[in-house]
Image (cartoon, rainbow, N blue to C red; front, side):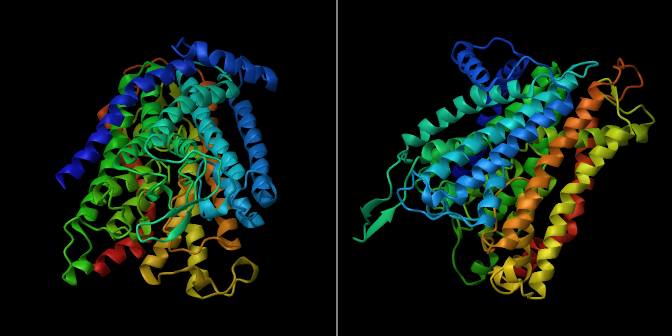
Length: 573
């Protein structure tokens, strides 16, 4: 156990230590300062802008940023949708995998465009190599979009009074070429030399230790898996995701993949401090996020190490902890840590089956996505936290009788209304979707086109756990996470279409809101700091932000958690 815990702590500390210099590098990239990689990337970027006809030096206001962001995402959606719809007839399909149904193609295309990668299919049997490559492209650009949006907010926070907030395409291309691509290359090489396949050949035939001849899927997996983690995407090349022995062969690759999904969200927080020259603010933000993360991860690891009480009552020893749904080469400690890292950061990859987690672990995984403000995905983690900063500044100002200001800009009704709407939207989408699905399942409703059979048929588990499976699916969709309690039968029109709608709304509205707030604040008159200004880089303000997150985000979901994993926990006891 001590060795397992040492591995968990070491990976976490190494990620934090390396995030600081990488954050400084990211800040330089967005500021346009010189870096050691300029001779490599300057010609590449100039070529991209030349053939696309984009003027990367043209300044944009927040509305122009938003227009560009939404436009490119719409194009990518239609491109991906049609490739998935006709993949069975297209090239690079050596295993002859069939085309997707329209509802599944709709869900998958949206899911990868919005950086969620919710997979209602099994990777090795559901996609051709062409489709895998299209999805890998989306894993780069969806992460780049989130980082470009964050860069615009950085600029809005830095400038005193302006409408010009940089160029979306410049931020976007630099995010992909100078940050995501080099980091992904490093991870891909590490995976390649550890046994992860990287080939365009079809299935290979091997003879097992039992003497059976079996077909083993392979493909260009190493490159796909690298960006899936660096870009906090999470989509598995294989159906079992990072529990698959070819996707995550050893404890070393497990550590590399864990580091890969932690590094950019960590670094973006420190990049904010370097970009604004306000390191103390970045430390406060990182501290609040880290406390929230630890409050989720510690109960999870303890729960998994203690084993399953139901198995213990049967007189079965559990010296290694709760091993159902876990890989022996990893163990319960690192699997529990991964499950919270991947839900907090919105990566959504799994190295164990969350449906087999202990009830407390399941509750923590759900809560990580419900809060959706600790670290978060590439770029969008900062956007989510920014909303809570605005609310905390406003509430704090009212409580202490000071003018609600953030970085020299007065927070007024318009900004607060937008922030409140974004904060309320998240629980609304999750709880409304779960309520509808639960109603149909409880009444065993005949679904017609929407599901082949009655609604109770999509649940493999009755009672509290079945409710948790439905709650998890909508929570994962709304948090742009993509992991799942896979006891749910989700590849059908009802789940493909409803989660697809949740995916769209929960990705773009929470981007539109913070961009609008940042643009509105940037255009306001700068107010120099005075004795009446509420300081936002202090421990007290950090506590206030944490309290706002706990009250608005976490408590909204307590009744749902009580019906699902918490009820299951007390039943198990």
